[in-house]
Structure formats: C-alpha cells, structure tokens
Length: 192
Image 1 (cartoon, rainbow, N blue to C red):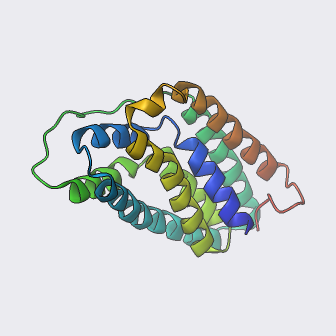
Image 2: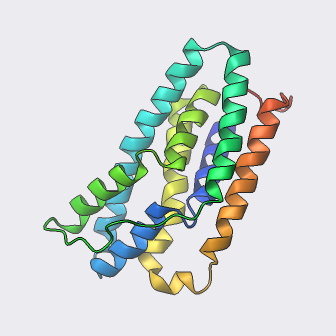
C-alpha cells in the first residue's frame, strides 16, 4: 500500500503545472465536448508509459546493490526536486490534428511523458518498491487525478488553482523523499 500511496501522491502533485497537464487544457479546448475520449487517451498512454518505466526501475533494483541503489534514488529525487522548479512550456501546441481526440491524446501524451520528470520518478519508484502493479496503479491514478480535472474544467480551473505555485510543492515533496532515502529512514521510506 505504501508503494501505491507514494506513487499516487508524488505523481499527482508533480503533474500540477506539468507540460502534460498543459496539454490536457489544450486538448480540452481543441476537442470541446469530447472529454471521455481525451480521458481515455490519457489513461491508456499513461498505463503504457508508466508500465515500461516501472518495469525498467524494477529491473534496475534487481541488478544494482541496495547501497548503490539508495544513493542513486536519493540523488535522483533531489534532482527531480530541482527539475520541478523549472516551469514547463508546451511546444508545438497549435499543430492541427487529422486524427480524432482519443488517438491524438494517446499519442501526444505518450510522447510528452517520454523523458518527463514523472516518467523518471516512475522509474525511481519502480526501483524503490517491489510491487510493480502498485507503482503503475499509483502513478497512473496520480496522473489521472491531475489531468481529468484539467480536461473536464479546462480554463476555468486555472483561475482557482495557482499551477505556477504547485511546482514548489512538487519540488518539496521530491526533496523530502530524496533526503529520507539517503538517510535510510527506518519507517519504510528507505530502499527495500
């Protein structure tokens, strides 16, 4: 359960103001009234992307010594904290799509997550926790928790949620997690 909760919380917060959340806003504006197709595309793309990332993390954990793994994970999470402080921009936002909303969203989200901080966080979480299923479920639901409101509420949400400030919350969460891993905190937050 810890793997699920840590994965969900980390990705849900880290996703606030992320380029894929900006992509959700953009797609909701572009495909008005097609919310469920967009949500389905986000869901399928996230499961595929995060499964591959968590599997890679799980493989790394099985093939790297626990002490080396602790340092890699601790430094990685501190790096994610710094990365979260950098505002995201959405490039090529106005390119027209000849595909429908589901396929457009599926491809755009899968590609946008490649090399994204939440994908690297999923790799690290997959390395940290033995439960690949809980990590993928948690990161996927965290992604959905951040992006479904963006799709359903669109631009109205931006008036009430200061997305530019959420990156500081995400940075703090990543930093705390990294420090706890490096310090070998005994209540389950160190490496397994």
